[in-house]
Image 1 (cartoon, rainbow, N blue to C red):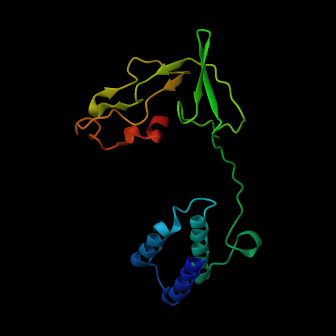
Image 2 (image 1 turned 90 degrees about the vertical axis):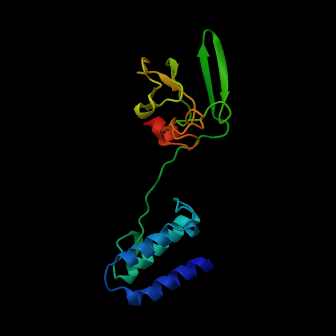
Length: 182
């Protein structure tokens, strides 16, 4: 609470200085909004609330009229989220055998369909690390038909201290889940 009061006091003291747009002024706002004080500004977090209050104070300082809900600068936006639960289950069935898998021990994943359960009947194919990186002469998909199949792959990228192979011990974009999803 003391930090919020400090933020608002600083914003109020800056109002006398607001006359024109400048790189220094923009840089100062970005520096504050990107600071660790705001804890990443995630939706529904204390840092997110501080950031939105700061922005509202800045709008007020420049004379912007509130156009949000109930005469404020804010508008309620309902959100729907999908979050795997610790008791999430996955099993693989093949050749008359069922293999139960535990979430975070044996598998990681999310189903964005917003349903309590899902059944997927498809062939699974192993694709190494799931990487195509021509600059490293690497292609885990070469000659593999993945259409309509479930891809099973390693996380990250091949471990190596060789800087010529995926920049050595540093994690490149190829090892990130976003790359694998793409």
